Amino acid sequence: MSAENAPLAQELPSYQNQQPATAMPVTAAVGVPVVLHAVQGPAWKTGIFGCFSSFPNTLMSLFCQCIVLAQVSSRLGNVFGGYKGVLAGVFVIASLAGVFRLYAQHDWNLILAHGRPVDEFLQDEATKFNEAAIFMTLVLVTFVAWLRGRVRGFFSIPGSVVEDCCCSLLCHCCTVAQMSNQVAVYAPGDCNPGPRDTLPAYYVAVPLQ
Image 1 (cartoon, one colour):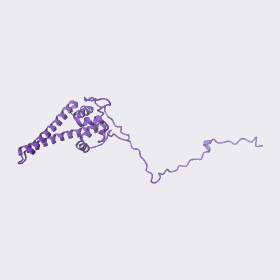
Image 2: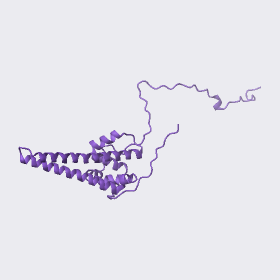
Image 3: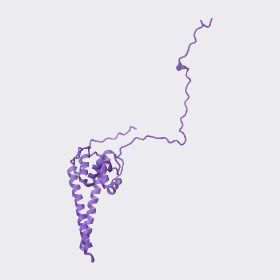
Image 4: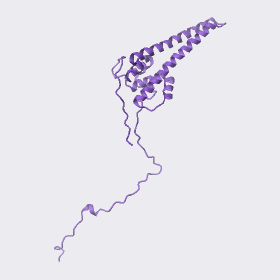
């Protein structure tokens, strides 16, 4: 039989002609760090020293703390008396601390002007006024630390009571500004010192085991 009349050789499909692949182990190069992408959990929008990111927020936290703290309270569901309760309470506490401080300074000025012998009555009075001013200041610091803990709990932000107290004591105004920014008290172009709407419930997705 001639080559021209010989039956054509059956050709296998291309996918059947492929050689089986051999699995090769994947090894990391020595000295090359492996980057693992972790899931970012709840966190503060700004750090404790990020108060300067919003100039109006910084000024309000520095000079009008009673309004800012009252607005934060209203955003958290009117905790601790709500807007009016916190506004009145913080204003009274801050005012008393300032008045006691002024009276103490006035007595110390009289003592310095009087000279020797030192007027013991004025000295005792000045000491008591100083202690009262310190007590009122610590009450305000404690309240800010407690409110920061409520903000952390609402947004499920990691932290501790010790951290809240240290932030409130060592950087009081920055802590107030951080809370204000976290609960979005201020909106761009809006300068309303009144109460704010309550934040909706915040849920954190928990991965299934």
